[in-house]
Image 1 (cartoon, rainbow, N blue to C red):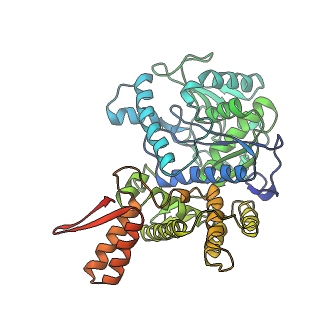
Image 2: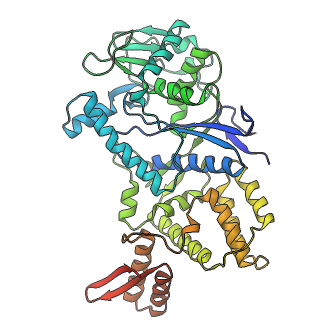
Image 3: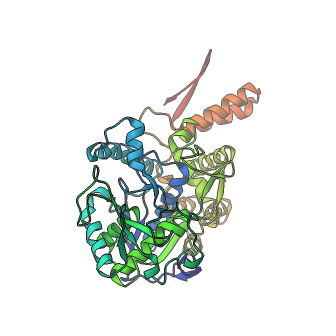
Length: 461
């Protein structure tokens, strides 16, 4: 069955044609590990995970790369301001050394990996760190330089976009309409405001290079790492929509200037999550982390389920009530699956319908709706429903096969905490029938609620 995906480069939905039959190489722009990722950042990795699972569901061998930026990313994505890692060192009172930078990067890298695990995101085959690929960056810059696409200023080595006629094709930019100050601060030494750094000079911090001590630009790092692990061209490059006008545009320009062939055949981008209808941003303080959701008794899997209910190309606004409603739906789904008997065979007609939906540019909202339609279908046995839903979950990634036992530790999962809070609210409202039903559901999940004088306590049975 064909897989159709929306290609940002061509602005249309296309049938996927792999470079190597039965294989797909995909590169996802990873985090800059100067702080915790927020839930808007994490949407891009849930999307990447769903994309991987869809290809695996279709029996493709997947080679997946998520890079880790631990040097070179300036405060502005468009090459302006201070290095993000350097700014964090100052914020934490750390010395401005590569060793201190690596120490801080390792802390936030581990937190990022923990977030991936909490969201049940499959670990990619490669998680390369930019700081360990400096030689690859230098080699690529040399190629670009030899091909006549660079010039030097007092601040570093620049890519000359005027030498690359196709510049801006991903974002449909017109070079002659880009004005100084439109995307970056005016730099009097730059020939064009769109020109970007391949190598930034820094006599005090960085690595030696043929041009002087310093560090690579953010854009060159992604080009170098993607090509090192996947070759050029590779199949699919993804990221958030904010990467389209600058970061991915610059990746394409420098990579094609170096090698004379495309970087990737397909470009896919996930839309923003807004908070209070404004863009999530660490600089503005308008963001939430996954840990903050957990602290509000929201399970990471509930967040994943909520993301599945919107198409990856559709912007969505975060709302705590909507997330908790998604969590209740997930709890209900898990409970239903746990009550169905084992030993059934997946329903072939539902499997075909499911594959058709997920292969149509990852139509997860309709795939989730199909799961609920299956549950209501009296013509399918409960055992067959369970087998079919567990097959769907190979793509959903909701850990439906682990229920009813959610946790093997004494830590009470957020789903159970949410049920307990709902029961307490029912008790306060003297809705005893609802309170008893919620208690029964908690007990069916392997936990027990103990009423106490000053409240309640949840324990494992």
